[in-house]
Amino acid sequence: ETEIPVSGPEPDKPISAPRIHPAAWQVADCIETEYASPELCVRGFAEALEMNPTYLCRIFRASYQMSINDYINRTRIHHSLEYLEETDMPVEDIARAVGFENTKYFFVLFKNIMGTTPRHYRISFRTGMQ
Image 1 (cartoon, rainbow, N blue to C red):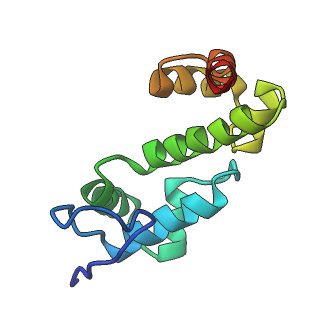
Image 2 (tube, rainbow, N blue to C red):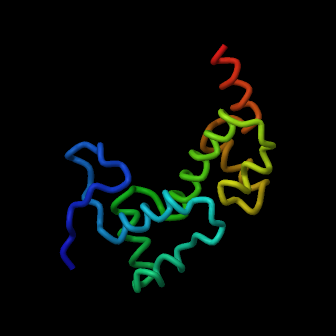
Image 3 (tube, one colour):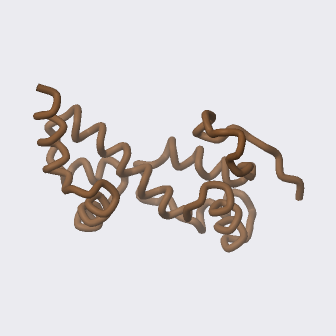
């Protein structure tokens, strides 16, 4: 199968960036638009693309240097920042709005990725703006 260079969701990558496999790009594009769906999963992507899930995971990791699940989680956390910065929604509601059914898992991931809790992020963001 021939790999075709495509400009994925991040078109400003340097020329030395790895080539993005078309199927990996499709998965990333779907995650970017459907991140709020708790139904996103490797098996669903593989079935939609009529690919073996293991092979899809391999080409995705080669294209984006992270697993599909990591990409889903990082995308959801990224979108949660917008809610934290721009709304007064409770953090539990934000977690559900970005696709996390388990709010405790959201808190753990947020802290691992951002280095702080969602509440402290919101406070720091708002005090930094004044």
